[in-house]
Length: 344
Image (cartoon, rainbow, N blue to C red; front, side, top):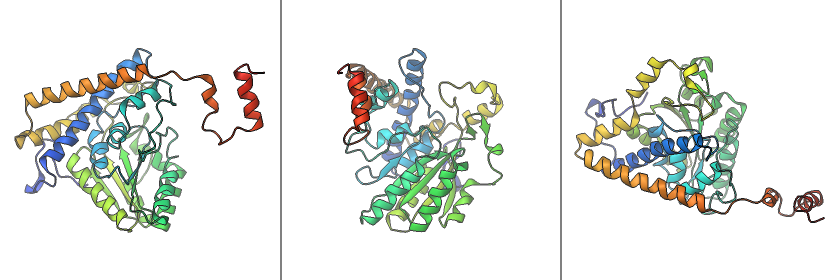
């Protein structure tokens, strides 16, 4: 498993820093923002102000490190449902994500200039679409790359295998980013596959596969940049398996205390990806208590502003259920819409 930083935030084997310190600091800011959003969104959901929410807690380095390898002006992001910081980094406004969680998808719509698909709850269903976009970019002669996310549970779905097979055949410029957080809701990794490494599956589809420490921001970014560069050069897809751990519930309907070993969770907390980056930057004179307080204050204000903006957005109306289904309503839909609005 590829790793650059140990749990104490030290570079392994005397390696040289692969990233500029300011770049790492920016990555840490996104990680801290993600964790703060987790806390706020969970609280709002418990108050009945948001719908079901899936936190990123424990997986911040995997999501942020990979997303930092993309160019939002030409690359596409195809998320599953636990990649919020990557979505924000790609240009999706936080208040729009909150609006979707509030049941207002019209106002929460992805802006036209943000190259991203919506979140996908059905496991692996987004992967064929990611390959389709990547193949389309190749056919159009564009140099864009698609990065798509999914978990180890999704890698057992047929859509995963079909998407990988097609991507390998047509050499689609797509990076399959597998977040192995050890849990498919309540099913542990060892009950999902007998494979020693899920990254080894890549060979069967004619693409390289790499397993990386998903709690190591620097290592994740390096393997992601290599995979993106490979795809952009026309060399086809790659599969990255980021080994991390879900340090929270699957989503706000879940109670992990019923199936999660407390000792295992405690061990995962000792590998906290945020603490690792903070220790690394502190050792390089880039992180201290004052800077931490400044980041926390700015992040709190950013989230406050997003929540306030979402709450001021126009509420959806019933007729919008017919919008964006067909370019023109079918006669049956038109009649249903008239009936709904009491138009006879």
